[in-house]
Picture 1 (cartoon, rainbow, N blue to C red):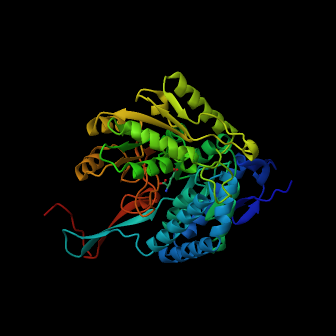
Picture 2: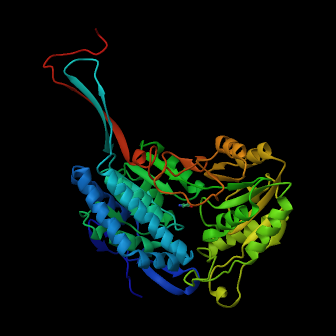
Picture 3: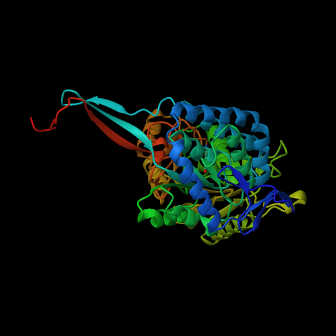
Length: 495
Ligand code: UN1
């Protein structure tokens, strides 16, 4: 079998030192090999970190607008290659083609946005209390970053990390999920074609268990940006505590949509279907809890179930497919396990509940869109992240109760309310405990020009993406500079 995708270390494409490989399969048809990549070990990580350290010495001194020009070229190349990259995302990750293209588009958006930051990256200049002295604050790069990314957004999430890290002057060792490695290879190929010097971006393929922790804890790594499960994120953060690294983790979610009695139900149902079953529920922002007002609960459930019945499962490459497969057998087993748990806990399964094996679907990891009603906030299916097409409907008495239910989880990534009452919207906006709140829109679909991230066990450290409080805070640190040009010793606070 051809070892068609390699690591990228110091500008050179290389196999794993051990020669071992990982095979990436199409989750919609596991007979199809998407590619073969190196199964890297510690020695490969060591080489990549060393290359990134060497490259950092000069990359940090390249003027930020020049770094921006390279990233701008990467954006242009991504536009040129969008169709191919989007299709690859669908083949390797399974999401439907419109979403595969959307994944590539989010990478493009981030590239353009961060290219522009090359001419901003601004700090502050403030007056000094002393004559012949000035004071300013500047953003500085931090050093070498480990970027560890998940499989559910194989183009967008790496781009969220790579572009801001590079524009700020850091160099990176990128370890993508071993379930979508070919997308990562293709993304890195496109970005390096834009003209990055060798060693600025290094790609090391491999399993998280084998090299993820080793990379994060590596003494040559100054900062870690991770997206994935809460369990792994919290472990990485603990691991990096001692050496005092910059660690930011985007983790799980249990995102609610509140449907009020004054909501436009058609709109709420459309939002619930997209939020719960888009990407087959494999988003950290997926809407896995529908908190419906008792006055509209039954009508909402009926409409929601009818809409779910109309969803077509299949290969994401078919234009008429609504829901693709889960990423792999282990994830499918986990999701089916949660469905069993829901039944045992006493929730009512109203639609779905099983693996789909009709015809061609038998060759992939398909799970039917599943809806439970009669869910109570204490049930595990209402508290734990499932990461699959499973929605739990919870009945509520009114707004205050709905918000209390929405907030009663360990997570706080995104939350939404459907209401036509401006006051209800304002109260929800104020009181929902989440990093992102949507009004009359589902919990998914964040745009890149604002910070992305959550509270409680959804996020740790800094937020991702753009805007004030976004990822430039993750990838830079502040330095304050006082310059005295009086030619004598001046003492602050000593008038
Ligand atoms: C994720 O689910 O891991 O807001 C990221 C959204 C997307 C990003 C999701 N823009 O749903």
